[in-house]
Image (cartoon, rainbow, N blue to C red):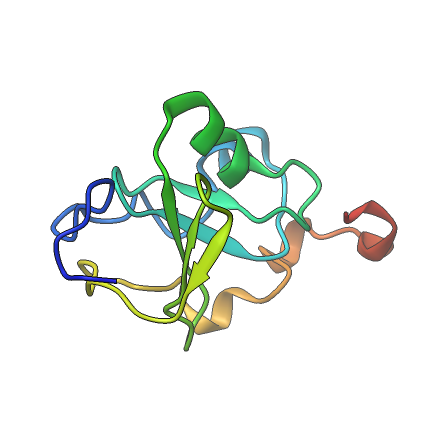
Length: 117
């Protein structure tokens, strides 16, 4: 990937440290993804509500980046391709390491594995 890509806005900060919709509903997630265009933080497709994919579908924003500590890969929803490199996004580039996976810890049900995709 080149450094200037339509659909990636490196200067836009993330919307927070958790999935926007899950936070609003007191839900939980497995992993987090960051919209590379507007900074929306949503939960991954393994999570019960799959908010990152829903955000991409609703907005047409094509790229997400992992919002997990130590990961910086991108996913392109239009081409269904993963990229191992791309522009560096404005920090923070992940949720806090002590937040837990799945998280947040205090909202994850004991039988969480029965609820994932």
